[in-house]
Length: 187
Image (cartoon, rainbow, N blue to C red; front, top):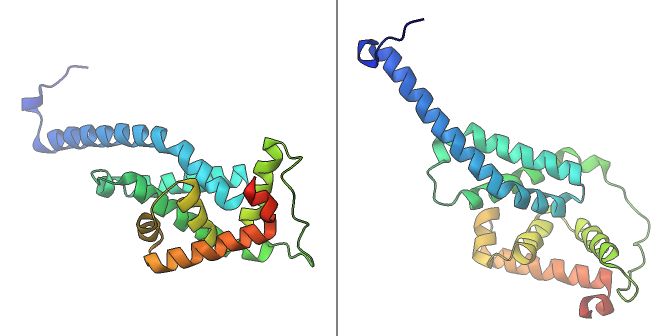
């Protein structure tokens, strides 16, 4: 097969090559973006749902949604904030679809005391307690205290007012304190 010089190709062929080159550059940037944010997104998703497999699915859903609109958003200066917003929307959508599978208990489990717990037990206890919160409150606690974002940033990510974020954060923390007990919180 003989190669036809670029100048001899028609305008459609040159346009196609330029388009493919642009797409390849965007794909490379998306791949680099995924490598940098995927572990963090998966951790946040896990904290929101308490299941590593579901967290992986939610992360993949987030990345797939972002890839679908990558040509529009790839030059955005704050892709990490955008990815958190897409992830939270995916979590909320998943919760709406699976809300009928919740397990209702007649009594709350006994609060676990931190004195004899190992790190793994502590982690499980915290994630279990976090899972009892409503989805928005859980998102606020995860973004505010796990991801260490400001009230304003959390409000922007979730599309809420700063007052609402502050109020719901305080209520969620008091629920967690009541569930875990004061001895747990002080240790």
